[in-house]
Amino acid sequence: MSLTLRSQTLRSHPQAKWWALFVISLTQLVVVLDGTIVNIALPQAQLALNMDDHLRQWVVTAYALAFGALLLLGGRISDYWGRKRTFMVGMIGFGVASLYAGMAAAGWELIVGRALQGVFAAMLAPAALALLTTLFPSGRERNVAFAVFGIVAGAGAAVGMVLGGFLTEFFDWRWCLLVNLFFVAVGLIGGALFLTESKADGDNRYDMWGALFVTAGLGALVYGFSLAETGWGSPLTITFIALGVVLLAVFVWVEMKVSNPLLPLRVVTHKVRGGAFLIQAVAGSVMIGATLYLTFHLQIVLGFGALEAGIASLPLPLGTMVLAGLATKMLGRIGPRPMLIGGPLVVAAALIYLSFITPGGNYFVEVAPALLVMGMGMAFVFIPLQNVALTGVAPHDAGVASAVTNSAMQIGGSIGLSVFTAVYAAVVGRNAQGSSELLTDGYSGVFVAAAVGMLVASVIAITMVRGRKEDLLPRGSVSDDSSSDDVPVSPVSDDTDTVSLVH
Image 1 (cartoon, rainbow, N blue to C red):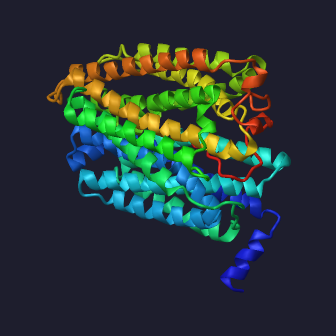
Image 2: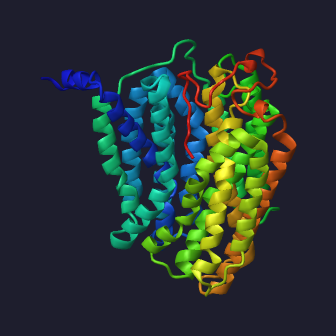
């Protein structure tokens, strides 16, 4: 029997869709896992490749920036070019990028490899979820499939921290990148055997100008913020931030003119949804930026090994997972607004507590309680956000609205990390390698800045996420510029346009 005939036979088997779910969920695990697995290995990678602190942050920023900036385009490619084809090409590219990054001999090579990982992750993530929506179009099976997918996404960060710690501790930091080759091999074999091709109907023209301007604008903006550690008044800092703003303004103008925009502006100009996107960006800055500096404190100051640091970080995702069920129940009872006001305040309080860390402090007194409370607070942020992001959205726009939510988190994380690095540099200066006290002061400053950000997120919820409980959930209706926005929509639309639930 030929390979093609064998794969067709397997895809027609009654259990094939569940094997396909396994393959798709594995992809989601890899994409989310790679956002955290390198964090644990970064102190060792920095020493091995002789990177300074400014270059170090780009190992994380490059992945998040490329991922977030190209997520919308990746979704369109999968819809128009073919979801399985995009999935397979994305998987191969992700594997090649992981191999390149894992074999890096210099800091810039590691950063380039991480950026390439982000590029192909932006193809993989939306293609995987679009395949899921076509495999499970409705009913109980769909609910089960999305529950499995969501659990894997939620556990990915925790798995990344522990796996990263284990590989760094007992093998080498490079294996935090090379381990992806195993996942890629399984994904390619499973994809060839169990996934079927599908495409979106209708107008399939790409908005390439929009993709160009939004990517260049976000890149210039993030790079400008990264230069802020040398001074906010620096000509280069001002130039790149201003260039980023101008390019993003041009992107908005382009989206107003083209017939098939990459980002329909009605999705982001709605006040409630706009508030949700801003809150997601702030939450991303904390989850991506502030937690990285926590890793540095655990390993560089407290002297934890890589595996020990990974395990020590677990109270944060565990706190979120423990309260996820309660937060889901409360969402239907009290609505998203109180949760989006109170959740950031809880996270801010935990970050303030964390800012009182000391060089010789006890982990179980100074760190663990803060992480647990911070994770609990994040449960009351992330659970309602996906719902609020779909408030009043027509089914045709549900995919892009969800993708914007997740792009906001990645871009917010990139900008937030740059800002936190500037705060850290302002506190410690450039000659703090031998001083645990000064390093700790720098990390404390980062946690205070992150707390201020979460307070801002709460204010955004107060001023922008307004309305009745019924109107703030997807099954309600919120007036919008488009009359079609009054169509009720479920949290995961049956529309097969690409959606992304990457957190």
